[in-house]
Image (tube, rainbow, N blue to C red; front, side, top):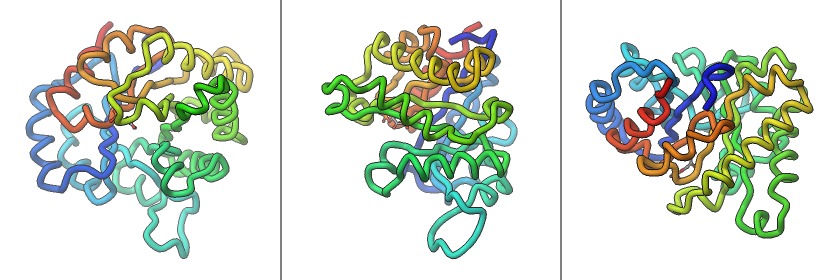
Length: 257
Ligand code: 13P
């Protein structure tokens, strides 16, 4: 973390979890526990149908609400889809784009990720752009090249002045939902390399200011060590974000001056 130059952001990604009733129970439990963190921003990315309730429930807190995906067009004949504009109007601030589960199961490509980043920025949302390698790619020794490619493709055509709104999340696929966390060194190495890619694209000032999160089995036990790395500016948390106590512990680890 480095508060001097950039925001620390702890974001939960609920994926396809929690009904409306469970969302309300979660809010009631976590709000008094979490208080008002000063040194980090807290985000909960929830299923579309729970967004209006979540916005209402967390209105009086420091928790911002995010979505888990959006479409790249502002409107049109795309049955079952939701646009960035629709999310913005509901009070959504962040939107996860290019999560590996969407790349794996729903045909998300670097091309659609780039279009969605543009759509999100156009609508006034903050995209959390996910990149990450598979175990096979790591073992082949192509992690750095692949991540650089994913970052460049996602940001193609994004002007420097919009980069203040962009968050990058490094999520190695082999660490997601597996309980296998990247070591702090592995995570730091890739996050640092992402900052180098952004420096080459946009210069040192933009690179210094961009928030780069780590995601992949981040939990109450390992968060502090990961967050202590200078180039890891927060986390994108799946499983542990479903439990108020665990999520609060992670936020507290990030909420350090
Ligand atoms: P887990 O924290 O459950 O491994 O999920 C990480 C993730 O995919 C967050 O987007």
